[in-house]
Image (cartoon, rainbow, N blue to C red; front, side):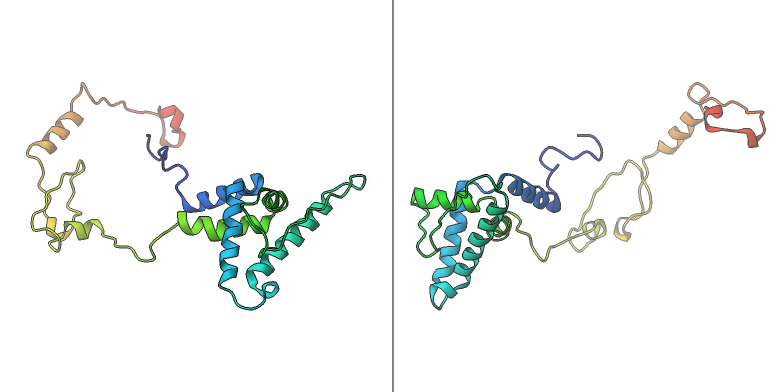
Length: 209
């Protein structure tokens, strides 16, 4: 993996990228059959713990809104010369996902309906796969190099500098390293120079190269 190039596992690890691609995928392809069954079962589970008559319970009202909205969208998509084939879906309290005939009718009508896709992602997918902690422990280099965690700290840097946490100062240079660098930079077999006689006003990058 080169510099600033994400690895294969981290290429799509950004939360916003995951959310956006998931929404696009389900909007284009719709819910799968197992997704639709999970959605219906989730609504039925919510309805069981809601009070009042079935027709007034929020989960049942939401499901009915889906059916009416999907039916209107299906009707708008039909051409005038095409025959209308209305899909009759049972109310939520009577609908049984394990019944193939009942389920396939609901699946055909609702699998690509945007509010159903939104509910599935918002309620069943993102809460499980996008978990995160509201509070996290963090530590900087100064904390890790301090005496608060360790009594003895050893480190190596390819660019030695005294810009270190106070507990690590001073930086100990390798004996002879600076002299070797000066020797290489002043060696005529390594570094050469050329005097440019033209006025500085006429210098250009390409000309100097």
